Length: 287
Length: 304
Image (cartoon, rainbow over all chains, first blue to last red; front, side):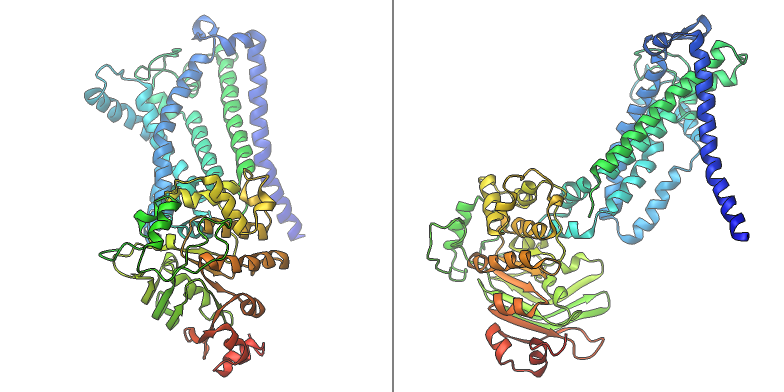
């Protein structure tokens, strides 16, 4: 009897999370359909003008803002995260690794709002006084850079797990051929861990795409198609924040547009996760 | 390498294509005599080149504070097969890993003593383990092919060592020497993981041969293999020792008797003691008329 109760409780918990996800997707879908009853889906996907107050709903400027910041973030996080992972797994002593890895993961615990203010009040002024005098107060560059720092722990930690999991026998095989440590790490170990590394990077990209506070605070709210990274832009998530925090009446087209944008975000991250899943399965080495 | 006369495995020499390396080797007075081979027109360009002998004195191997092998002295003859036998856990694998400085790769492990490869003291302060391992290759107990194509598995070691000759030729020759060519020649671009265990192990042998070391260490290379693959690996031995010195750890007494010229018997007298080289002699003597009782008991299968 007791056993049955416990099993029931556990089952309920498992299904609750699935049902919640399912419910959220349903609401998203429902409201999105409502939006597309009023607005053209073709225009939504192809127009480069986003001006909800005048009834122009072309999502590309928002996608442009999100992707610009994300690409900058990946340019920062991919090399730093991967090199950090190689160092931690292949070069750091066991004791050092035991300290460094959790320390790195603490970076992931910093609230993103703090990162956002850091970008706005430190990175942007720094860039202005040292590199780009013309940079806007809100700009994609500082948001992207700090977002890169934000996803370094994800990229480094997950890649490190993959690299560390490469069997020692493979390293020994390389050493026995007269390979140096560097040759072994870069040409044998990293390729063997490639599927895990790609998964780590995609996970980082997903986080960057979904990231809200940094882009809201540091990148601004101007939905501009094709702007320079030194200018302000609006990310998809930042638009949603703007509408939710504003005085847009429920049920209006503008209110419904956030669900359409949310759906687009959802599709983007889902696609990335599917690619990552496929890649891991396709390229995983079985030792 | 210090002021030692340039020896065949000197890094600079190793980076030369086969032809010039061959010249250096033949003209090197410190080399052991190169064995005469009857068929000069044979398949291997390097077949007329000798292996290098090794000399081990008072070698001790440790894992942290635990001493695993004690006071081993052994002359490993060039171009001969030396088999190491003995019960499990008596230090054979640890010992063989000391011969190309692979032992120290394990965290906390180190070795003391003197091991020379030709003129080179491989534990000298200025000896670079990377260069030692180029000269003394190793095949492991469990096949460990790289996550690369069959071709690249073989070519990689040669490539990082600066091989500039005809790579296709080297790959084919190495795979032939390892008795694997016929089975893989049509799928060289496929992953090495797609091969069977026995094929993977022969791929690892081919990969070691492609670097053209002077000594090849084999740590129970056939322990996880089926009899047919084992047979194929054994068959390559006679060919291999024309060009290389071979040291092989094996649990299989018949295998040791069949393929080796010299046999070393490792033994632990009391539980918890480090392993030691109990007896070392020509294989024929070891298997017919050993000096010590424990050796006889072991080779006749009374224990172990």
